[in-house]
Length: 311
Image (cartoon, rainbow, N blue to C red):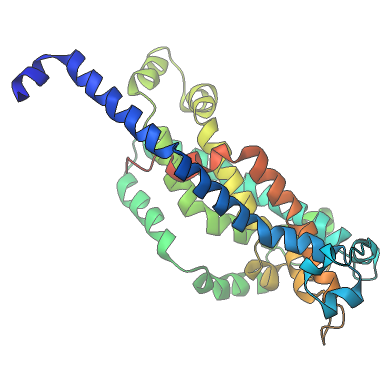
């Protein structure tokens, strides 16, 4: 029986198609659909509750749960007005978060894509050892790097009285956060992009070399366009991580550079007297991640799996 199957590729292909069809039927059955809908509803309830709480008056929010809006439908936008345009509003921190998240996404991707190409297609002494060391940095907790970074910044590098700050005030405000996020993102970014770039067929690279292309030409004209799916997927992953970060923001993003996550932690006041503003502020803070996720969710799986089968 085994011999007949091996000798008949058509039979083997038919068996594979049959197994694939049965798997699709199990995954698309009525029970799986109902379970998916139940999970989706349960997953959405907290977000719905957060939004409803954000549009309820202060008195109702403090006295009753958000579901009482269906019994006593009172709605107000005062919470959003206070959050955005109040004395300690979130308008400027929202802009700060964009100013932090976008460069902190671009910088590690640029460095990681160049490093990934070098590790994959350039021959130099100690390449494998260096790559293993970079990969090993993924297991180093972020908390262990905070004290060395603080020590480095306290010596005058990228601080308020530096030459860079005088020339580029915006860069001086955000540079510490950019550097911190870039450092923390590089090990994983280099690992994923290296594995993706190394899967590009070697014949393509060799053909370019035969035609006289330099490493720069190969990278920008061949490798970079082919690697855009992996770059885009990790960019989404990194952007969402930076946007939702609080630890780095509490340590490095101070004063006028404070992002929205840090301001949210301070929004309720010293004794919680502004607790009714927190749901509105939290809902504003999740708008950008929500839009990014809904618009580009198909890239998340690619970002997590890109090159993961090859080390």
